[in-house]
Image: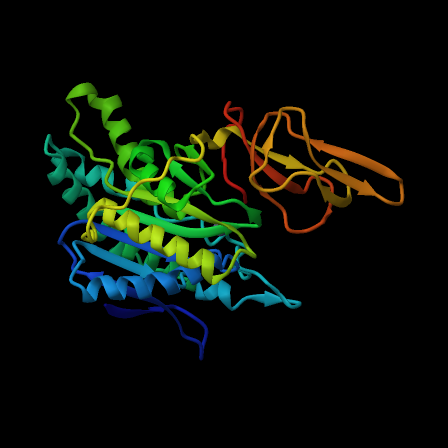
Length: 379
Ligand SMILES: [Zn+2]
């Protein structure tokens, strides 16, 4: 394993932060996987998974079982990790700018398409190489003007030529779930089965240029654009980057037992992809726990007025249409208002706080019938 420390510049006088990457295997031999943890710096389960994953990959590499390249960034966001206010941590947004750390990644499609469009042909492998070279040239040419821009450039640069990208996050209180773009579901399904994912949420361009979609989206969006322009005789564009956001349950689900289990599942997935040679038989794929559902069918339940949140349902519960998931209790007015799911489905995440202001999000239910449009991600 090779360790590389990437300095984040430009920064303040007297301050220098780094992002560290661990590199297993060899570049250009087989597939490449990239895994990062805690881009939202207050979402810590992934960091502990990385601790266990490093130990497993050390053994794999020592045994000569690497068949590709695996890059790990165990702590993806040292800027957010250092932020705090009044004994609380601020890991989702950069305090200086208010920007979400998981938004605003480079728009590769817009920047590379004009230069490469004419050189694409019927050979999917050649097109993959052409597109990746253009992405590499674009990211190498960026000159970041802030530390946050440098963080985004560093992470994108490490991941932009990977076949598999796993961005490890977590929700507030939640079951294990993931976000994946529709064209990659077939590639993602084995991962969902090995991890024991309860809910897979599928979309195409959720909006906001999140880390996963800025990499996976290049390929299917280019394919659709070429299809509009040239129809069936268009160049062959492979779905070459399965980038997935894995939500490792809730913020408090940080323990060795879960982390070791998740790390083993990731190694099994790398074996399944051929990045690591199997010992004996390849890992068996458990059954999928639930069929994937559209992110556009995910209902965000909100408090109708202020009050104490008394939950009636928890993460993993199946909710019927019209069923209450919580009550909002105002002990001064003496009101008790049920918060009802309009559509049924799996309650996959709920809030941590037990007091809600009017309009606060208190739970998410994964339904099956799409009804949302526009930007599908939380701020
Ligand atoms: Zn997150």
